[in-house]
Amino acid sequence: MKRLVCICLTLLALSPLGAFAGGLENFLANVNVQARADLPGFSARVSTQFGVPIPQVQAVIGSVHEPADAFMVFQLGQMSGQPTERVLRSYKSGKGRGWGVIAKELGIKPGSADFHALKSGNLSLSGHPDGGQTSPGKGKGNGKGHGKGHDK
Image (cartoon, rainbow, N blue to C red; front, side, top):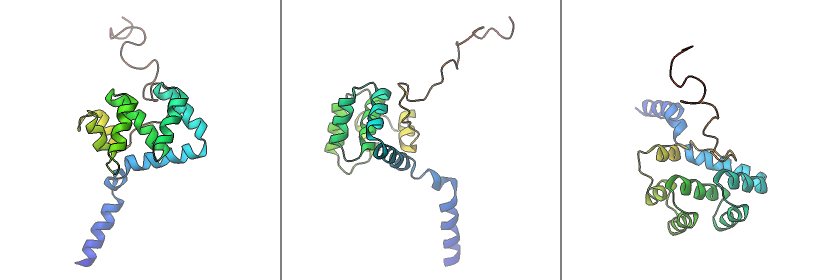
């Protein structure tokens, strides 16, 4: 019986489900590594991506525990449409709560695309205003024809 339990636990640990377990945590750990390696560059990328002045980014970095927390303050502000100050208040009042709880408090609905992206760590620190989520020139209506078919 012990052997069967050990085999099941090993299979569970090696399964793809285990790979998703730390999505957001892994993303934030990587953001912290990048930020600590080049804090001025990190500040500039966050500033550009979220359209806020570098001094505001630096002020938020100075008021949170980790640089990745500053990224999350701006990310949740963008996702929820809430000002940075509101997100910071929620962050500070809820020490020990997870980002999912803070997101719900800010109005991001569980089950929404934003909430799923948050929980899975499907976020981007690209340093581009669109967050690196779109490609120019792709999608419907961009180009000739606009759905009329080939050569018509």
